View 1 (cartoon, rainbow, N blue to C red):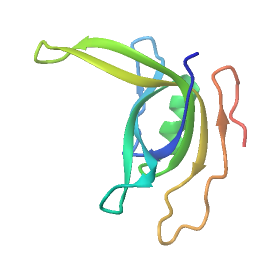
View 2 (cartoon, rainbow, N blue to C red; view 1 turned 90 degrees about the vertical axis):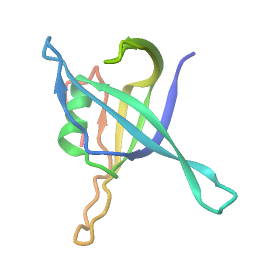
View 3 (cartoon, rainbow, N blue to C red; view 1 turned 90 degrees about the horizontal axis):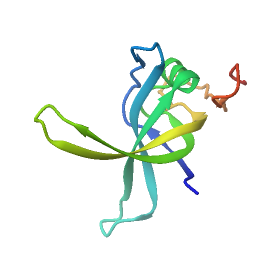
View 4 (tube, one colour; view 1 turned 180 degrees about the vertical axis):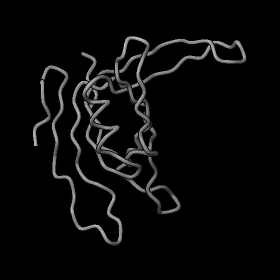
Length: 128
């Protein structure tokens, strides 16, 4: 079974792009805090590369920004590509199949949080 579930924060503002076939896609890293402190007494994080397609990509692109907390489930995928230096690059990514928006990064003047929005590929609309 290949199933991954993470909760973390967006490391940058999402950039919604479209493929040549007009499919929405967002690629970004999610910072997932480790449950223990380092020797220096600080929490460390892992940075998980994630890929969102179609409605999930549109949801992330339209409703999320750097620092927002999200929950993502999906599968791990490994692929190979050739970079600009003509080198083979191996990468592992979480390909999302479900998304939960858990909360916005609070600004000083902001008091409203997004509670939860569920978005699955087979659903035709976003639930509020």
